[in-house]
Length: 180
Image (tube, rainbow, N blue to C red):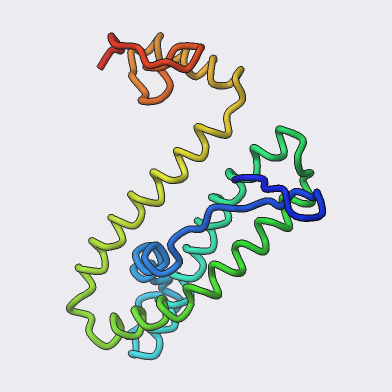
């Protein structure tokens, strides 16, 4: 998240955007919601289930990502909760609108050619790894200094090394002898 000063001396909040097509397809396409239980599926049914599950999963991911991103602004007092909700709502709507066609195309292709579903599953694993990394990075930045200190203390007590947390001193410089 960044705040930029526009021409009328008002600040504008800029949210990071997820890759609507890449992340949308990798996260969304393999997430078929089995709406009819274990009944025999039709190509149309598989396509609709894949599209619905994909859009829902991608919207949920993007909403959490935007929430974590805007939380820094709320804690700094730059925006309030109502503004945060509106930013997240608008960002999720724009992201899902932009990725809907790509997720629909992949859902139809997977419904027509179910033999390539394992490839979509591998893409889903890669997509969730990317998404998880982005979410963890945003969550780590969102922590207050007090929360980071408690987390660092607990990690040190457990003998766990967390890159960017346990290997950084209080003044922000990296330590050479961080435990592995």
